[in-house]
Image (cartoon, helix red, strand yellow):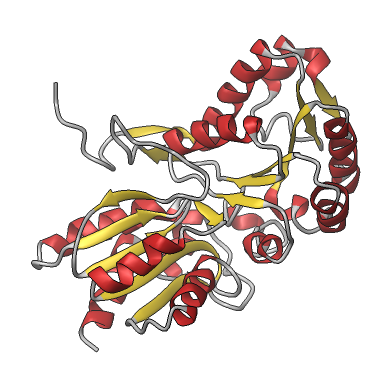
Length: 319
């Protein structure tokens, strides 16, 4: 049997793994419910609805209602997954998330689908480049951004056991497997994908693969890179950030999100409050409405590609 090598084997889209995992959970427990805002197709929930029609609630295109209904069902002891495009769930229903879910401490599992720039050419109205920032500022909610199929399945299963709110977001593209046998997923604890001493890439979600490929490319130049999948943006694994600052020469954070208020600024806050100084760069989407194009084109334009990340890391090392 060939040894596992991170990033070599292509898996499914995380949205597919989400729907399969959710169907499995709900098939074993009639208290598991899905509430959706006209998102059965985009959420890959058609099989769920056909198999368990009494465990899915459709509210139509009404995200505020989606969250309110989900909070009400959760208050009766139901295990509720509220599914909607991330761009609308985290904007139109923000007040309901803040008050009905978090302030009321209802353990709703908020699932933001087609996150980041997954909607591609539909443009900034459909891009979720703000959700991590706004939800980081809301008390009493965990934020998880899975990087591959393993992290997705583990996050959905973990969410079912949580007694507090959680937001999980992912996109639509098939993802490469990043973790081999023995990997352990814990909300709030990052996962190491690769070890190194020159650069640490701290990435989240679908950008982790690109950080890994940048690390592989840089190895040809004699540089070793640590790659961390920071799947939980809140609560952040501060220990992993501090170790990176003391054990590697530079840190580059990577996210499919605005550079304002997301993973990068969370990591910077950890370092500054600990009094640690290390060459540091945040790679993400700038403070502007994104260019129009596919997710791949947008990533390349803003330097979130393999080559772009390698260039950023090398420039930081050479400062």
